[in-house]
Amino acid sequence: MAYEIERKFLVVNDKWRDHASSSDYFRQGYLTNTDKCSIRVRVSDDMGYLNLKSATLDIQRTEYEYEIPRDEAEEMLERFCEGPLIEKTRYYVRHDQHLWEVDVFEGANAGLIVAEIELDDVDEAFDKPEWTGQEVSDDPRYYNVCLVKHPFNEWDKS
Amino acid sequence: MAYEIERKFLVVNDKWRDHASSSDYFRQGYLTNTDKCSIRVRVSDDMGYLNLKSATLDIQRTEYEYEIPRDEAEEMLERFCEGPLIEKTRYYVRHDQHLWEVDVFEGANAGLIVAEIELDDVDEAFDKPEWTGQEVSDDPRYYNVCLVKHPFNEWDKS
Image 1 (tube, rainbow over the protein chains, first blue to last red):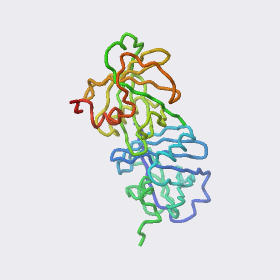
Image 2: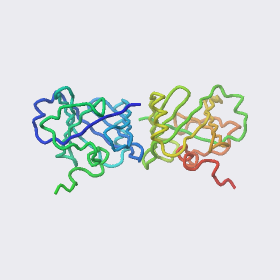
Image 3: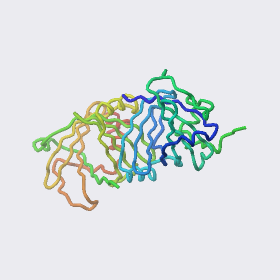
């Protein structure tokens, strides 16, 4: 069993950029999103990935990820995915003892920037960087699978 | 791109049994079945598999298959699948130049026996064994993904 324990925060300023060590460009889509699991296909610069996650709305989710040939992942993105794709650049930012992932979205989700930290334990302590704001771990609107159907640009932000 | 070209026939007698060289016992379920693809998880005696197939109702379908750890496949069968599982024993039967797969279903699909042959080309010639009957390649009722929701035992065979 692989568990993913993840906390997610909005990013409120650009100070993280000075500490970004590297980045990846991702294109991803969803093959399905049932009441039991979501299945994602992702293409990075040089790899393809299949990812299966339990549908639990919680910071702890069961997750499986498998590397697959990039060209097969590209074909699945084109032929099997429901709705538009998500495009984002992921920056890796070291802060205190942890590696944060800062996702800068493009296209219909442009303007949205979130920071995620993966923990080994739900109670693990971590230092919250000054460039992070509100926690959104439990807010389904920020799930990537939801950003496909209800992209950030269409949200009512009044 | 991986294409699967498969033809499927009902089995009308037991004469294939004398020519079966080996067999596997499969348990499988479906993670999803959209209008674009179906995603199957399967457990055999010693392996797990993820399989993604285009939803085309045709003898030629796009297909991807990946080996995954058996224990992870078991967890997915238990937690992520929709509806009951399919259980069957697959026998491998050499006939003429081809290897046939004869699936003997159990449980809610007991009584159903089908034989499949995989071809390299849609026009490839093959000898139809005397133990096969009607072709059902294009009949969606015989798709495994349909046998989950409408098992053989519930069919109106009058």
